[in-house]
Image (cartoon, rainbow, N blue to C red; front, top):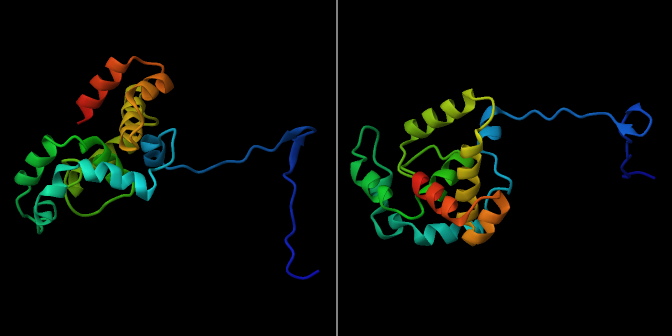
Length: 162
């Protein structure tokens, strides 16, 4: 029958055990990986609606090369969505503009620093998970339960990454 697909069984090293498959993951993907997939478009808009930049001139966040970034960074410093914004920029490799209070060069340095580490520390992983779940409006109690930490620790970690 033409147009049919052949299903190939995985090769076996020993009876009953499938051959291990090697998945190539870059250090950056490992470093920014969170237990959940990147937020869906609807989830992204939820943190964007809380972002202070939504009430500011967009030109401030996309200055020309060599342009001033201090005003945008001041807005980001007070923004409740800063951690989620930075997580978005790193996840989607945003090449232009100020995201999460970081310029493209600062994000590149952050990615380079993170990429040189073999794997994220427990604290980095927790911070990324908290930022991702917070961006998806998951309740603090649920985040704490999932990570096995207290709600106070969630608030503390979230405030450090903001």
